[in-house]
Image (cartoon, rainbow, N blue to C red; front, side, top):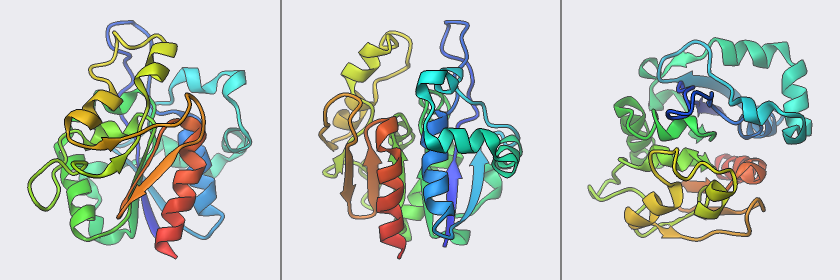
Length: 225
């Protein structure tokens, strides 16, 4: 069971002067969920090397069992500090791909040609493709085998407009995940803000927010069993 995790390389939060990156819980929770079930995990980013952690995800009130484990886990830290370059990985070598969120993907993965081609290849090979929170941003330019947007006519979720408003970044982000998924023809739905909410449509798995990350990984594992 080989799973590719794709993280953002982007660490600038628009013009705010603040930092962003990937959300620790959205990496750690699925990482350990799959690792503990015997998955062989490779982590890649557009630029390779150290993946930037969103400092907001590292605050005391955002800690979970998985994030605490991650911060004590030297092997996992090493993985994050030495990610493979996205252009050096091929879908053929993996059974599934998982995209954790954080605001970073809105800037890089949404438009990254290598990432777009990778998702399209995984989809063509009918392998599970999973995204949580802001990571569905990576689907923005992805086409299905019919040449239409991949999410068109599919049940999808992702970080809600109201959740973005709550973190006061509506005017900072380049686009809103909820709006983009709807614009691309996705059948978008959501649960309560900050509540666990995951949808599966064929090989596409999407989760709404950080709280949904473990369930996305469990749904992914169910597909691989």
